[in-house]
Image 1: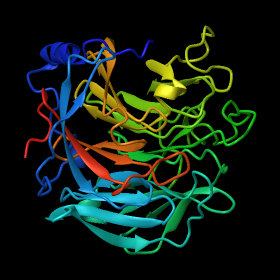
Image 2 (image 1 turned 45 degrees about the horizontal axis):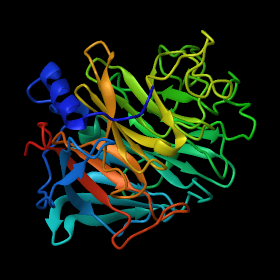
Image 3 (image 1 turned 90 degrees about the vertical axis):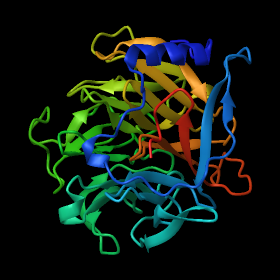
Length: 387
């Protein structure tokens, strides 16, 4: 699908009229919490179509700055955010208190287990849906030998629940998220030069995994003895679900196309044979694909019927609108193009706004004073950020 954006504000307004008067509704119950005490937003930031007209305003608030490659983001019940730093191996708590620079940033702990190499290190983080009772969080991290998933209580020792996931210096997957079914999902990369793991049903490389909180295959998996939920992936860095429990995931690291996929149980997404759309019926085609230069997207967030994805090489956020049954509406729209550099993390905050993280303090980035940052986005035509 073409990534050209025509009349961004007009399309967005029309989409909102179709969906509801308030396009960005309340969060799902598993991320609900009290909204943080937010600092005042900066002046609105404009996003334009390719002709430079039809501006869509986005109010931007810098919540935190001076971070070191923030990677994973998740929310605690009080509305504060937990953020991992890939290379420092720190877990930070963002908010809910504020200070002169934004939300208060507190180092929760610094992990000794991760080993950074390329894009490996301390990656995804997820908070238990029962956090009020079990106080448990989960992290995905790289060691010298493999990638692992561990559970822990903040400030406590890691207990690995999955080990032996393929690692490489360039691609590791690493996203963690709890689905609406209460099970933990994790993403992996193919981690080879020839794409040999993504199509290998015996390998966890190039897959989306679904598991219990003990790291065992979840009931209802395609193969009951396997963690694998879907296959044929190059490098999945983002996961999110909509209110209809449709699962969305990004695909990056391919040769030609970045993808946004709808993930279905047991489906094969084609890597390394397919890169973007494929005529082969055994592969599932992406919902949207973009040229690599405009995408290489990572984090994904859902705001009612808008799916947003943050892009590293593309240095923007794409907004994709769908109907209630998942059909595309209009063309994708872009916001924040070239305004904050490389964008990696993207999550829907407890108040319905978006939290995005920059990734400029890494090879390929061009850090500016204050990088890396966590920024909050509220769209001018939407209901995000009700607080």
